[in-house]
Length: 159
Image 1 (tube, helix red, strand yellow):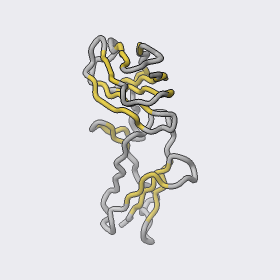
Image 2 (cartoon, rainbow, N blue to C red):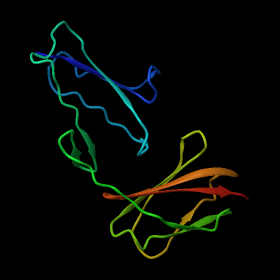
Image 3 (cartoon, one colour):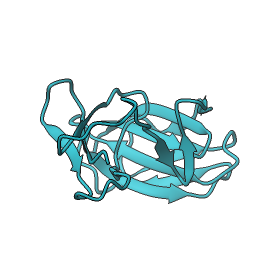
């Protein structure tokens, strides 16, 4: 049997962000990740730990999000949605107009290094308020996403 090892990289030729090997079982390998950014490119290296290669030279890679699978034979459908985010610059809270979202929304706010600075779930309604008191002065990327929708805006925090 083919005993796969999987490495995941955020840059081509960079150091491995994630690695998995389920032992000498021949069972499926899984990488569980968080904080991946829609639109970014990620690199996978798949190789055999032993000397056995796949009998037909092929294998399957599947990507899952929120319990649904997206494979090479399916097309993921995600709509980019414009959001109204104010005030900008912000001091202690931001207001999000979520009229265009009709399902639960995840918000992630990233600092300039790509690190998640704030993350929370929001129930869709006409206006949500997010407390940003914990954020330092700076420029942040606000990402909103639901099962089928995605929004991204820049925000400045000045206290």
